[in-house]
Amino acid sequence: MSSQQAALLRPDVVIIEDDTDTLELYALFLKSAGYVVRQARTGEAGLDIVRSLKPRLVVTDLTLPDLAGARLCRSLRAAGAPDLAGLIVVTGSADEEMLASVRAAGADGILTKPCLPTDLEAAIRRVLDAAHDAPLG
Image (cartoon, rainbow, N blue to C red; front, side):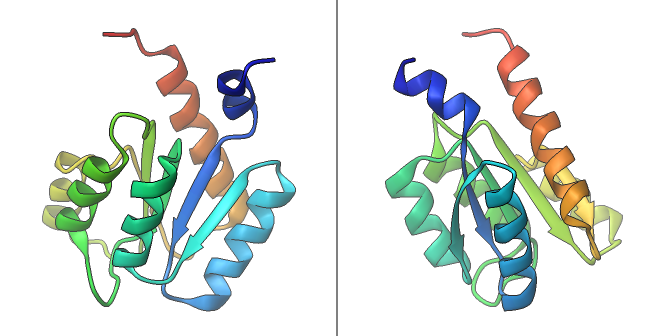
């Protein structure tokens, strides 16, 4: 099996979340589901991880103390290119205008808090499946 095939089977996921309990819950659940998980508590720390590791997928809280919203999504997309297959935002916000700007900035999925780990993992699978099925070029 090539390293690329192994990455598809056990993709790297970066979780960026400033709430420690939520971060640990998601990380523990995703690790038990077979994902290789990296964690960050700020947007800048998350960007550093994404730049260095080029993960397949990023899960981020939308409102972090240092970076937020569409700016965060654009920065993560740029930092992970071309390897980033998906960006999932988890938010407590229901502001439709802000959510539309986040979608336009590159979010592949938006989940509302509170979000169960099983719902997050299902969203990750959908995004990765869609990226896998997308035509190249």
